[in-house]
Image (cartoon, rainbow, N blue to C red; front, side, top):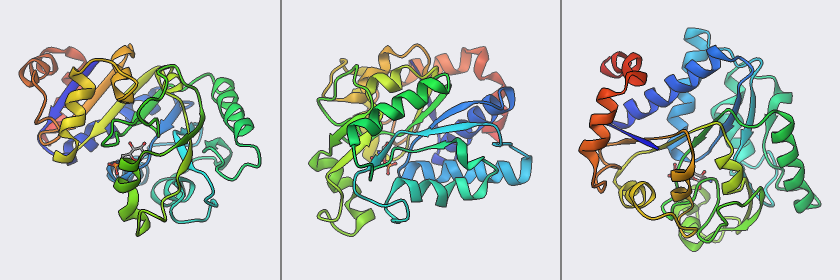
Amino acid sequence: MEVIILPSKEKVVKLAASLIDMELRRNPRLVLGLATGRTMESLYAELVRRHKEEGLDFSLCQTFNLDEYIGLSKNDPHSYHYYMHHHLFNHINIDKRNIHIPNGLAPNLDEECCRYEYEIKKAGGIDFQILGIGEDGHIGFNEPLSALLSRTRVKALSPLTIAQNAPLFGSKEAVPKRVITMGVGTILESKRCVLIATGKHKAKIIAKSVEGPITSMISATALQLHTRCTVIVDDEAAKSLENRDYYQWLFENEPEWEPFKSILNE
Ligand code: GLP
């Protein structure tokens, strides 16, 4: 795992977008794993800008979203299907046949989960997975106690996640209680993963995820097992990390990051 601490949310988004941009230009058939949540909104706005102003081409790429609420229709403004079209897909040149999001209205949800895993395999696996983090440490919707080898399946949301997402729904009662989510094991199989987090409300969970012991109580700790995982955080989300100077030193001295430093100084 590597940890990159940047001075602002804007720079976190810029670096994450630059990594996706680089991978997509290298491999136009990239299989991209996508996340939702407030943190991702500015990342998608930046990808849309790069598509419109810098010719970033999504025409051959495939996408797989991490999760979806059960019981919401695709047109429901709270569904992740709607979210993704609203923030990203409607504004880029992706082939709609290459978009994959779990169907939370499937008549047989277990079959839907198996189908989703099969589609990921058929695509050759996820090349680049972007992740956010919930305040209880979930990645996707892998709530506390999720098996570290879990696959795509139905999960119940934790009270903390319901409270965290309630403002988006107007009340706690309106938040669906169950979801379909890729498993922790599914996420760990991605070839590269990048987790982004910003703001002081993420500081404690980032410290536990990066520096704490691996535990199914905090799904994000499983990322310590991933062979190519980068955590990019702003100063506020990095506040509780004990080894900030060490992460900074590694970032300064790792040649891989050299080309990105000029972008970050802009
Ligand atoms: C939801 C998503 C997660 C995401 C989280 C972060 O719970 N299922 O994949 O990481 O939101 O949300 P936010 O960026 O709004 O803090």
